[in-house]
Image 1 (cartoon, rainbow, N blue to C red):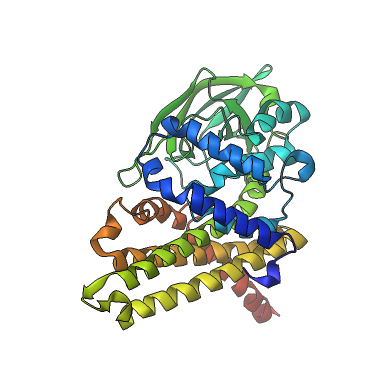
Image 2: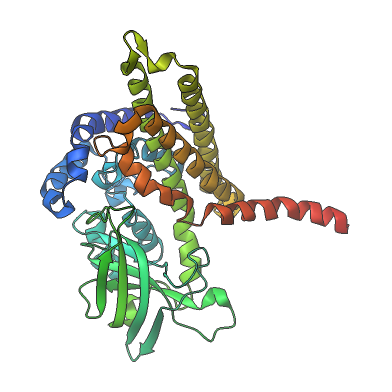
Amino acid sequence: MIDLFSSRRLPSILDKAKEFLISEVYPFELQWLQTNYFELESTLNEKRQKVKDMGFWLPHFSVEEGGVGLNLVEFAQLSEVLGSSPFGHLLFNCQAPDIGNMELLHQFADEKQKEEFLEPLSKGKIRSCFAMTEPEHAGSNPVVMSTLAKKDGNEYVINGHKWFTTAADGAEFCIVMAVTNPENDNRYAKASMIIVPTKTNGFELVRNIPIMGDEGSGYLSHAEVRFNNCRVPAENIIGSEGDGFKLAQERLGPGRIHHCMRWIGICERALDLMCKRAVERELSPGKPLSDKQTIQNWIAESKAGINAARLMVLHAAHKMQNQGQKAAKEDISTIKFFVSDVLMNVLDKSIQVHGALGITDDTILSFWYRHERGSRIYDGPDEVHKSVLARSILRNYELKIKN
């Protein structure tokens, strides 16, 4: 790990987390991925208890709140380690979308909301989901949505259609972004975030959306949901009416750091598998794949891309941690499209080195190739982030011309 961003306690934590994954998780991944999530819960809970016993539960929460107390830069590096397995973050209770919901509730929920929703979530007793994207509107524009939450006395009545609501299958509650002030002239103040228990009448889980043929289950699924005259107490609103966009930005900023470091963890694992395959697979007796210059180029290019991506993400995390999200806006856009591109390139090369084996479910590569293709789409498409960065760069040149 990079000394520039390390701390005295971090190497030991990273080493122990890696050892745990190698011994307790890697050997069972393929079996788990081919088993319904709800049949695995008892097994996964046993693993989660081991993480608690190690003292690594809730790495992103303070020690006083039952966590490890890692700062953003430290957690980013742990996130890379955990990202090397589809189950890593889940076992440490820092998986998406729960981690984003925990951070949101921790910062902005009132005491009653924290007791009812945050406490059981942080203890791992329940899971949650987050509903913002709508199939009828561009997901890259969160100020345009049709889901409405109308005030009716002491309740909100919610009607709308969402999809890619990750982990809704089996979640106890959903944080939904809905329009509460449609007539507001300020488009950034029209929506709010409201907590909806999934057992509420009118909350409908339509389906788990198949991702390139794999609909998944539980934590590893993305649902289509509908809100049909779904009534919840008005006190379930997070913050105030019209805060939805602001809260979404607060949630998405650190989330992109988490995602990017998770992707780097996937890259390192894919590179490891690529190298092992290259030296073990013989084209003819005594002539392994690793002798081929093309394969050597792929390995070198992958390693260079991973190292560059890691430094960029940790730099962004450091800036966000010390100067705030606004200061890191350009950096966040940069890492979002850069790291997702590195991820897909490394996965593609690793699959190619594995040959026909790489596209089967006998390796974990096919799972990642299916599910991580979305990395270039969710949390803002790469094209949007490139535009944000380019506009920011060009602004200085335009000012020079005007002056």
